[in-house]
Length: 173
Image (cartoon, rainbow, N blue to C red):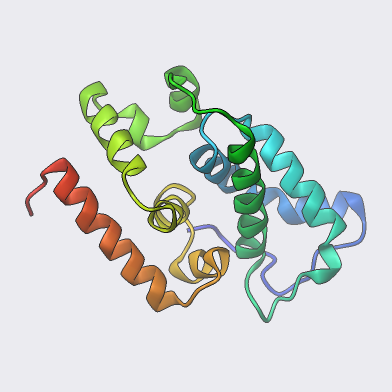
């Protein structure tokens, strides 16, 4: 999970301090952007998310969630917008995925294709839950904040997603 060093503080108004405030979350933001908008430039998505966070920093409310949840929700929104602007991408950039540390794409090539295809077979809500929890390493609470639902709904959605993936991949426990 992401360490929450500044969980109790609001985003600072000073640009340099804001950079330090968001720094612990940048890699998770990039992972989430990569997962939600395959084929889009994840750095552009993160940049857009950071610009949005900066412009809306006064709207952050620590009582409603952690900095990571707030930043991930903004990133997820920007990634969805980027994905809508893209046409479907036929090829995956395996070298970039390996450099970014995507565990699904680093595994055995046959398994990688099966899992990647299976993930596309999930509902949009299930994919978002899986991407936030497993790929962006968010807690259940932060995933709930990103998805705009309760923690119980996240747990149920993840359970349903795992069951669907097991059946699609014919995995037995």
